[in-house]
Amino acid sequence: MEKEGLKRGIDLNSRRSKLIFVVLLLFFAYVIYLIAQSAGRSTVAKYQVRSGSLALHNLYTGITIRDEQIIYSKDTGYVAYFAREGEHMGVGDTVYAVDETGSLNELSKNTSGESSLSDTELRELRSEMVDFSASFDAGNFYKSYDFLYDIDGSLLRLANLNMMQSITEVGGAYTAELVKLRKADTPGYIVYHIDGYESLSANDINPDIFSRENYEKQQLTNNSLVGIGDPVYKLLTSENWQLVIPVDSQRAFELKEEQYVKVRFLKDRQELWASVDLIPGDADTIYVVLGFNSCMISYCTDRYLDIELIESNEDGLKIPVSSIAHKEFFLVPKEFVLEERDDTCKVLLKTFTEDGSSSEEEMFIEIYSANEEYYYVSDPRMGIGDYLKKPNSMDEFPISMKGELIGVYYVNKGYADFRQISILSQNEEYAIVKPNTTYGLSEYDYIALDASTLFDDDFIFDNGVGQ
Picture 1 (cartoon, rainbow, N blue to C red):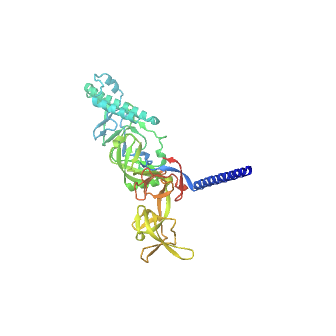
Picture 2 (cartoon, one colour):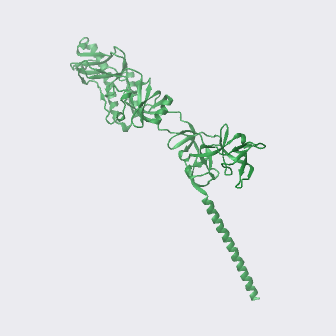
Picture 3 (cartoon, rainbow, N blue to C red):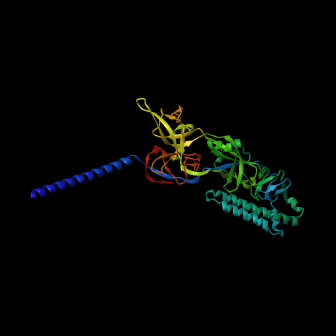
């Protein structure tokens, strides 16, 4: 009895050992299966497709070219201006006076007139202050001095007008002997500074001219002493003016094709249309000449202007350039397709074996794109040397023709599936593609962030979503 019980115990332990061995064997087989599956999957970063537009680099600094005429003094003495900067003067309008003896200020002290500002004059000064405050940039602090000169000139001009009125009332004809009144011989807009670029033309443009480091302008101020032949003011004689910007050659020819472009001036956010012309530059740089025929007076005191070129950017699906791939597909004539269903089509494929025998099989293959004559298809069961047939016909089409498509790898289903895209616009980092196209992408789809790491039908391990 003891021997029989011992034997049963040994058999039971043996069965348990075999069972444990089988379980362990199955476990290790499962682990090996998972490892094999993992080896067949690509670990890629995914990108969720969202709607957007492209932010192109369209900010430029340009230099202005105008019809400018410097007017020189015919007298010696202290100058007093009566015209506001930017004001349009007609022929015969009084622009300034020259006090040859220096007694004009002394005589004005003995007048009973008061230098008070009218409501209109106060509004002009307030407008200048508001414009300066709105556009102030600490990085361009030098413009504060320009503003100071402008305000100082406006106040002195108003004081001079009041002073001349009072002196005329008190001094009468005696005033004519003290001061020389000078009038405009040519119509134009008044500017009270010179900078040496008055005769600048588009043909004079060079890279150094865009540097503001050495740019200087001489303010022509009230009550300053002038001699015969000294500049006293400047006239801008035409509403037609130009702004020249340096751009790379590719961008320049794109602008030239558009012929006209909308320009936003960052100084005041005003937008104007400009004609486009090109002049050659150095190396890869071309100078774009933007032509305007209005609003010259808004920028009459500015030699340099910061602008933005406004373009009708395409809206669509925004994807990274790194996700774009190029892939070849077989071209299948539509007349050899038996049936189309969703994104697949049924064909009758004729293949050959090594011994020369042939077989025919109807199958559905995936469509990636189409034109008027052909479908772009791909399937591992078909290749060069196979034929497509029409049922009940002798017509055959040899599979050999290929066409290339631009697309991305769609990974919503856990494997890499090529999807065609239609690019609307592109910069170095992103592309805007047409949404909801046949065989294409839709918003919120997931695609591979880097197309170079994938092949068709690769299984995908999720490695996060890029935005």
